[in-house]
Amino acid sequence: MSEDLEGRVRGALERQVVPEVRAFARKLAEAAPGTAAVLFYGSNLRTGSLEGVLDFYVLVDGPQVEKIWPRVSYHEWDRDGVTLRAKVATMALETFRAAAAGELVDTTIWARFVQPSALAWQRGPAAAEAVADAVAGAARTAARLAVALGPEKGTAEDYWRALFRATYAAEFRVEKAGREDSILSVNQGHFDGLLPLALTAEDIRFERQSDGTIRPDLPRPRREALLRWWAHRRRMGKPYNVMRLLKASTTFDGAARYAAWKIERHTGVPVPVTPWRERHPVLAAPGVLWHVWRAKRAMERKSA
Image 1 (cartoon, rainbow, N blue to C red):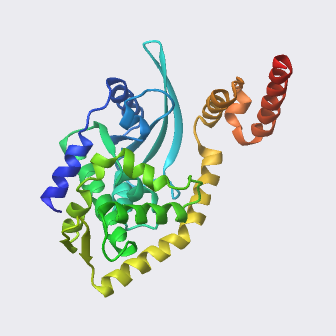
Image 2: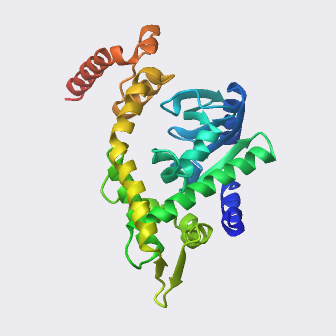
Image 3: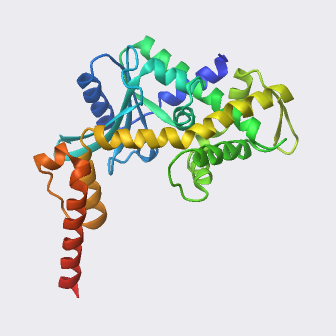
């Protein structure tokens, strides 16, 4: 691995996060046996806000237990009179490394973790080193595909834009048009200079043009191999994400509490979380929707 890329990734992972996030990460680590590290990411990392839902990845030792990963759960923690909420994805550290390196059909890990994240908790130096290696692998995977998909020459933003546009199209989720532009604009400092470092680590030569653009020297056989690699993952992207959604609908720990909080936040209608709703969130959904509809109608009549 390029020492320059490694240093860049280490520095990025060591970025400051608010004490409440570090405390929550420690709490999650202590609750999951064998936790090596906890990564924090998402918009709250950038803003430092504790509002909404905090996003964590808990990386554990040993083999991957679930065939369809990660395992997703929702957590609430009352700390000093403030309720903190978190959505937590848990998976094996080795599976995270392999996915980041592009060894698996998954596209979500390397596309997510070429973007900013922070090491909110680690068991020790060895765990921090392993996570840094994996995140650097995500940057390398993203960079080599970016130049395979991007123009013959262009700015670094042109290549990252081509990458994110392709990965969003491959996954089964709805993103607003221009989502890739907002990722690059709000994380400009993170991406500034990252592509050349990752290309150097991948041994992909490039020329810097006088107008600020770069021209990657990607031999045709390697480009074609990368495009074949991507075509397979693009075909598998939507079916794989559908399987994840179906799995999450029955195994999302805390799904009822998460849904109740989201519904109240967006509609103003409180939804009681009964034991039955907690155990059967999918079966409870029609009744919850009926409850929300009736409550909204009552609110509208009262305000009329």
